[in-house]
Image (cartoon, rainbow, N blue to C red; front, side, top):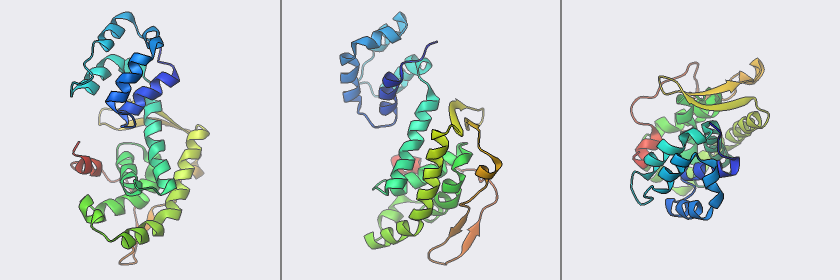
Length: 226
């Protein structure tokens, strides 16, 4: 089965990653006449027959188009968005920090320095997002600024691994729900550099030596209700 061209896939990934509204996606579909030529005929007829106003549209659409998409590229786009939030220190910094921990627990162990080194402590301290939101702005800034330099370094390191194909995401999921990837890093590159975390209030250093499984809902599921 041939995959969609990269440009076509990106539009689907934007929708799946909440970067594009379903209304704008539908508009793109009807404007992109060449889309028909990348489908098998029966699949295309099923696709254009979809009701884009149906609340189950994403699920129904994925049943048709999944085989045309390279989910390794989708996963890479998703992680790169998180890394960009962390590097730019934008309004989604805290959400993306916890997302990095969630993705580490979902099998992306190359995110250990961000997820374990910073995200785990953050998630434990602010288990309910409202606790973070209720902090004064200057206190939020103090906490973010205290860890930003280290996180930026680690995020840029992961971007470099992607660029040099040291890490290649496959988009495959194993029987326990962990995502797969090809790891071409050297032993030196795999060594943990962010596991020692400073508790800003108690000024204690905590070292984590093993992978900790998640229990129950992820932090993002608690936040967005998915």
